[in-house]
Image (cartoon, rainbow, N blue to C red; front, side, top):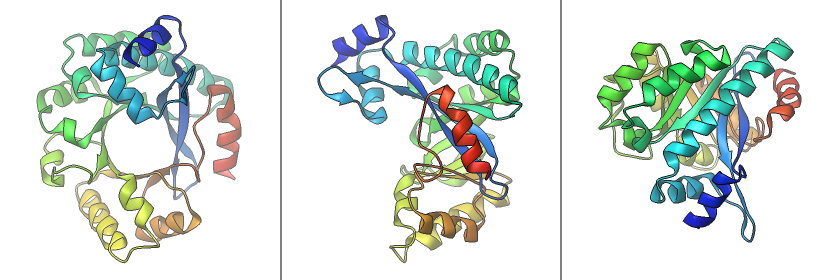
Length: 249
């Protein structure tokens, strides 16, 4: 699989897709999350988590990450200009990428080439990778880009630990969102995470929203943003206009 992925990268077969992030109070699309997408010739579409694992094992994650960042910044900048819509570009950043000494230069070069400002870019970093990345996160934040703690609650970090990193957004892990409306424990846990995050002025985004009941509970609890299949599925940049019209109406 590593060699197949290496060949796919060389042949330009790893695509970038975008999933809208929506403000639950206004219905506006506030960001698009850029993701790598790879269809294996025999196995078909590979799950993004498995793709990241294969890429990391094969030392391809930094290469793929840089390509996704450059393409997403370029395509979303053009899409915003064409449609008069302002939304941020969200890109995942792995622990390996955080340790890359060229990261800041890559970010600066990418933003300049796409005509974007630092505030137009957000890096989504897995909660578990943030614990040992204080210096890297601090350096990124000093450039003006935003940083999100991704999959919060799936690891063992406390919100207090993450707040020391000067984050902008907390993303509630999909496992908690999935239990909303079907488990009596899920709602108070999600409410507690949101209360703590809002107390320190962090935006809260719910990941993996799939049902109307989940969306209703998130509304009632005061969640800021959401993404997931119910909100809008991932798609190519040319599909974003339809997604945008769907979420704002």
